Length: 112
Length: 113
Image (cartoon, rainbow over all chains, first blue to last red; front, side):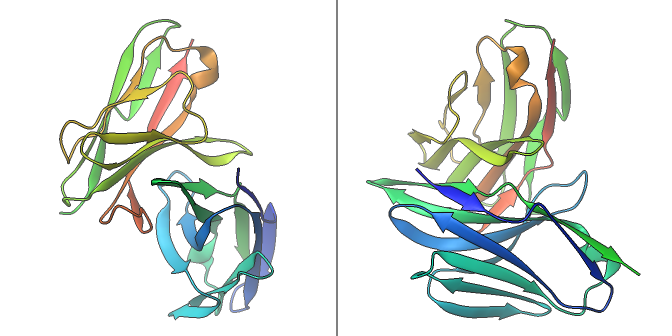
């Protein structure tokens, strides 16, 4: 099966940079993705890493190291609206099918 | 507007009374999936479908059924709901069969008494 670990909570100040780590154990690893979920809302896709390295999308970047089974989401120039839960997810191929497994989420609190 | 819709949004029912939560997407996506979200457990995949008539179990399929007779619809069926199925349910779809970039519906909050 698959398992993922990420911190349960992170607090950071507005304007700062925060990194949310995710370590995983899985077989048939395909890649790592990140989703954001505001309280009361639905998850929304942020980024995907299929290969090692850094992917940048505006203020958000995501990194993957397949050899370390590790990735992170980097949020720069934090804004109050970034307060949300962030989930990493891994995709594993199980024969002819594929499924997505999510971590338990990291709650980010941005303060003034 | 491109979207995933779920109905109903809120549902209170009693143990053993069969129910169906509908999910529909208007983006012609191949991949659709159902998740449940519980405090401290994150999102757990129930079932997914890579295309019409192709469905497979996720991590927590027990007590649920799905069908994919049309590309746009992917209903979740609870034949005999139990209190441990009280949860927040999300349907999601993805353009390609690999299911990477998933678009989520607004969620269905279910309470089973």
